[in-house]
Amino acid sequence: MEPNIAHLATLIGDNARSKMLTALMSGKALTATELAIEADITPQTASTHLSKLVKGELLIVRKQGRHKYFQLHNPQVADLIENMLNLSAAIINNDVPTGPRNKRLREARICYDHLAGNMGVMLFDALIQKGWLIDSDTILTMTNAGQQFFTDLGVDFDSLKKSSRPLCKSCLDWSERRTHLAGSLGKWILDDAINRTWAEQDLDSRAIQFSPTGLKSFCKRYAL
Image: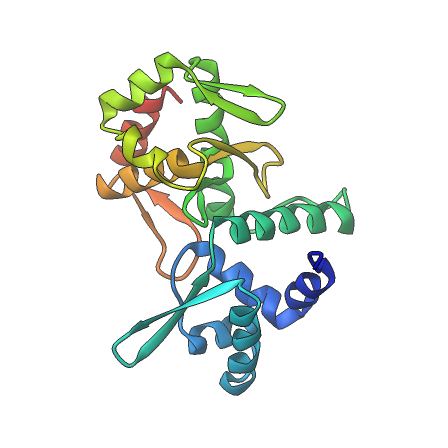
């Protein structure tokens, strides 16, 4: 049986479901009620839409006590949503400024589990300029110097390579129209910045907020 892209397109193409999927690009697990608010629909209607998205393997359900939380099924779904955001913004009107209107979202935000926005693009450019990554036709390769640099920072490459995800992956940024870093290394960099309290994610949006000292430390570490 051949893959049915029409079925996938139908699942994503509904306005309410597309809003739910975009909301889950924050990387957080959200309840049906929270997703109903994001989609501006009733909880009952949201439940129907969520059932379809789970059955279509775009979402997974996590249960904790009496509560159920929804997340994107995997990074591939996140990649698809981000690519569709890029494509839809380009098709609507090339003269319209790209990306979110919120300046904080444009500066730094989470893209499923890695850093995006202007900060994400600056990070990617710095890693390339330093020779730690090589970008060849959107195929990213880590150099020996890059592996040594990140090993010194505490990256456990043996652990990262056990993941089914690529270590380094280029991701076209929705607002900047340039590349930022995805993959397990991109996730590690953002997690590390948050764990060091250099940055934190907004409770109610995808924005990543760096403290003044955190921004200085982050920029120094990656030569931004």
